[in-house]
Image (cartoon, rainbow, N blue to C red; front, side):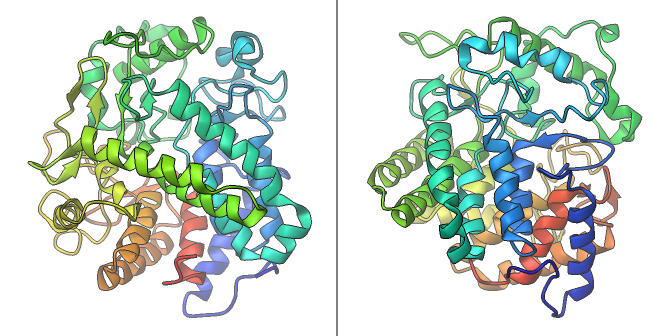
Length: 452
């Protein structure tokens, strides 16, 4: 496990290709998602990347996470981008000159260096830290990795459950569509419709310099994204909380089932980390149980057999079917009826796993907004399918998990480790040599059926 070459096996060529992607995208302290489209460090990308890197060099996987933790704000938030000062400041928009983290975020404890964004991404990090530790437990203990990671992760979860309970019912809310990670999901269309976009000439989209417009969000959506980020920055990255039944004082507030499911899964992981370092796992288990109950109460839709997003400003469920609503399959304590319904939905006509597609699409195959090419509006993403493979295996759905694992590995190799693929044809979309695709394919190739 500690060498730099993947172990031989039936997926040796894929593993070697994935290794090349991860080594080529390494900057010396962290891994970029893509050398062209995403030239900095992204939060949940680094968590998934560490899960793959642990098979090559566990110490590098630790470094990946600790570089990210080094950019944590004083209030506990882990920002969604950590900017590399060696990269031109206009290589990505919004860049460091837009976010102004050190000044606009000063009251929230933003570091002077490195410069970061001010929003967050889903909390996969405790799970990544636990899996990284398991890759070489002796070396991890010697280095004190978990001892350093635990307080960082506890503060991160504390920020989310304290500052981001905007609805007042125990779940975490996103204040920007980029925060749940599924940036351009149709689930955001209705909440975003209330947001006045900035003028089209107010910004330059660097993403279109490296990506096809047909694959990316529209200019109208981007104008709304920029408006929300500008407003959040200009109020000092202050999170508007729940006040006596009033709507939160932010233009966008959505409880996302994927984000909350990943927080619960990471609370379970944090309980294991606590045990490993001699701390009390009880508070994390209690929080996981409380969050699971709130998730079912607030976001479960028996009529659709799926968890839905909730628009906190109107306190209504968003009637769009997203793959985020399947991610609670990661959780061990779902009510049996909910688990059975989720599995039926996964295989049913809206997501089609094993029937019409081999990889789970990001959005409802029958939805009015379905687009097999455009960012998070239909394409299949490898991180979502890795998470669902793990959830299927957790619930004893071994045959389905095995088939999904095979599909992920074959699609990753055939697509050149693409960012995402057409769920019907498997055709590569987005950028290529994408780090989390390589990392998660490597993990499935080298740790099949292990659950670790």
